[in-house]
Length: 238
Image 1 (cartoon, rainbow, N blue to C red):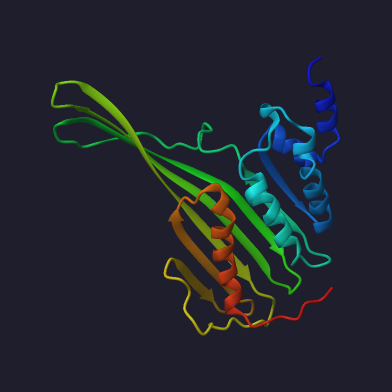
Image 2: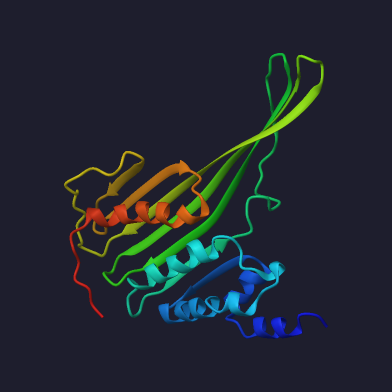
């Protein structure tokens, strides 16, 4: 009985918008017109939905929406954009690996370590210049739980975590489009590899400390933009 109007309004949202609300995931390959419809639907969310339980997941407004807008600008008229996003976070069952007990010395009594791998974003975009852009983002979190005896004889347990983000990007160029080394080298934290051939492939990857939510998109786009420095200017067509 409660929140009936809000539920009715949610039922009118774009189907992918509804999936983000209920499941915090998104998986689709669509033309840019459909992605524009999704962005339009998402823009109305805060006006209609006030209940905390039905808020959009983190990274939707700071990463997903602006990313869709940027990529759709370069998708060709017959191209498509595919996005797989898992915005459920690191604590979802199945993302954590097995716990390992590490060797210790006194005063440490026990040291347990485990890793969490969260491949939360994969994108494939067919660009108007004939190239195909793909990238993925993985959060890697190391957890440690340390148990030790203090000088006063008390038994204490502390937990620590360290998180990094791995970004992998690939651009397969159009046939006969050459890859050209830019005048300046890439930033030292970005690794670039070029595979020559009839259809050259440029790969750029990076490992960075996990950025704050507001800085997520900047880190991703910085690595992806590096791929475009390795080709000359292309002629844009409608």
